[in-house]
Length: 259
Image (cartoon, rainbow, N blue to C red; front, side, top):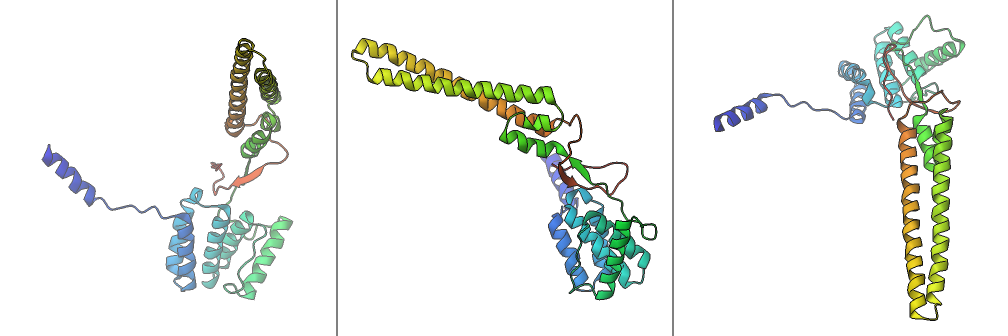
């Protein structure tokens, strides 16, 4: 048995360690290599980063395409540079390039591309990677339900469910408030009871209303929690008019949503 464990340990040591580099650090490494004019290293890092695009934010992906565009432009590959700039503009329509890194000639080139993109003239330089920006209303709905139970469901088109959550929460919360009011009255009567016997009766009433209040407070919290989770996880019945743009994908066939 010891020999088997020893063999497994040796095998584990023989396996190369895979370092999952942080996405932000990877972008910083691309920037460092580019500033040091190590274009091949920067390009290799950028291509590797695009291979794991779900790990990066939209802004980071835009920056990666900018570095690839600048490297291509420095080599005279204008078509490739234009394609990567178009991908960057697709992700960040308000893209502004660092004047320290980017000379005026390239700045003008990007501005021309921006005007073409706005006009819909993208045939000359199609995006190197075509991104699909996905709007998912579930996060927005969850925030709404965190404020008012049922609001998130109504926002996503689940009208009956939304009204049910709202009605149940209002009922439970109102019952909790009523029970607390009765508990306070019972306590007042208990404190002002003229005899010990009558005080004991008022105390029992006071304790009963306290337990009732706790039940309805717990019910309100449960309804709120279930409504929040439902708003966050349940797909919408319809796309609302406004929601958060939260993720992009460089693939026309499949995409990934990040909550």
